[in-house]
Length: 449
Image (cartoon, rainbow, N blue to C red):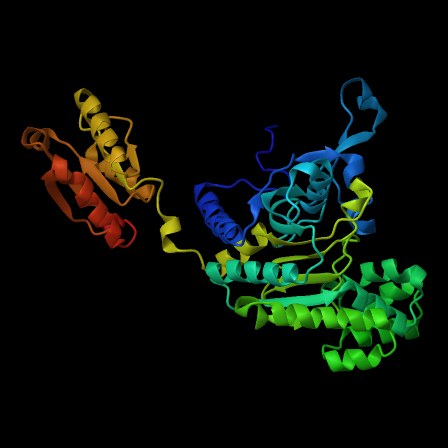
């Protein structure tokens, strides 16, 4: 029986067009992040298992891909390494390791894959890229406001115009739980249930809260509070709770500080929980109408670095999910047409076995002129060479036959229009660039002889 050629569940192979789309998104993300002053960072694909365990809460720990010990220790069944679950915990480790080499206010971006033993679904994979920005070393709310502006600019540059920035605060969530009568000992467990509100709805969350030990009355009251979105209504509900009032003030400050890209999109949403246990302050998430889940999220985590360093260092970050962005952009046909083009601007044909050296020389000339050039590898029928170029979406083909060679010319066929013209060899580069700038339609069968 032949071995399966499918990649493992929750992972994918990326063919050339897929890679071009991914690079398009990553390019815009990187450009915007760098314009906001963030510096690049990369970390290993796997970490010591103790670096990751216990950082993400009960749900996150279940999704960590552990790596069994190797060699003579293999039979023990123990794990000493794990694939990274996110990019935030590795950043916290890096800050603790290189604290003396980093600036006082460290702003980094990181675009790398992470792995989670999750159930695959639309836009949800076991291997996926995150596009993170994080700022370390300050509690200033300017950080949250700036990060929301940066990720909002990324999405607008990509063509999104209907996204919503959901904004909440961990202290507001805790205050609403207290006001509803949820015991402090059940707070962490209740947040795990609340984080599923978008997936299982109010009735499902209420049932899970009760299953976790919260009374029916407290569960219902809690969900009523989570459904409020008016700051005045929240202030009335949390009257006398200083931490809750403080959280509402922080959310209002972030909203007022956010620039025009983000400000008009922000919606204070008390139901936003985000399940990761390391968040300590504001939490953020970006959603669009036709995707279950989010395009990205983040928040403030002022104690995480301290678990490695022994003293707290304030930090805040936001992560865009590359895969989810690409899923929505593909379904909405948001990618530029040029990304569907081929790997080359022009293909040089081989007229005969004896002219191979001249075809390679022409290809070198065109490449030095800034063009992307492919060469057909065999002396084949010219019609077959044209059809091959068309199948690869190459817009132009250069032919040097015996007559063209005698006249020091090149025949150039535009496969998008079917037109062909001979030009002096020395004028081939500007002529081809002019054709390419016209950006005609894709090559079509009627233009192939």
